Amino acid sequence: MASASSSTACWTSSASSATRCTSWTTARRSAGGWRLALKHPERISGLIVQNGNAYDEGLKEFWNPIKKYWTDGSDSSRQALMKLLTLETTKFQYTDGMSDVSRISPDNWVHDQGLLDRPGNNEIQLDMFYDYRTNLPLYPAVQAYFRKHRPPTLIVWGKNDFIFPADGAHPYKRDLPQVEFHLINSGHFLLEDRFDEVTPLIRDFLARKIA
Image (cartoon, rainbow, N blue to C red):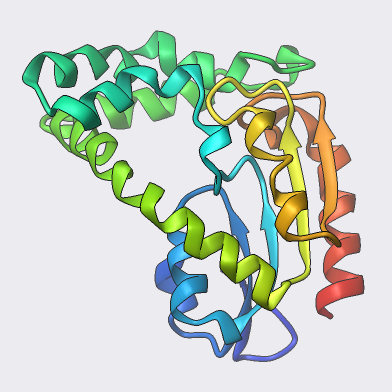
């Protein structure tokens, strides 16, 4: 968590750290931020969304085997997801769709895979895939929150992302007409190769909308 000008006004990407704040600007890649917004909408001073989905349109081909597991809950569907925990897939997340793979350190996927390969972690990850289904029923409430509260919002989205494709970025404009919207020529972890393009957008947004 990075502190802002006040000890009770925070910029955070962490649900746990946000509980200490009376207001915050949150950077979203996961569903936890939407749960915070629904619980304390009055505390959200702004949103920065980086390939963070809130619409059914954003769950495309990558999610098909996961959706099958949600539907039947079978062991065969669960085991079919083991391929998502391999080094090949971990590297894919960092490199697919990137405009300049040479800028991405292999340390990223080597380190991540080392953590994924810890004993017992496969079952934890598979449980999390199954639990993700509980986020989808929240989408209508999240979208209603957008329309009612109209938080200042910056979207910086890797347009080549296969996991959360740009199909999930465009619907934000329906519910947040004033959204600042940027599709970047990058993939899932766009900050890995387009940090120098995205950072000025974030700093400018915070200076104008939040400071």
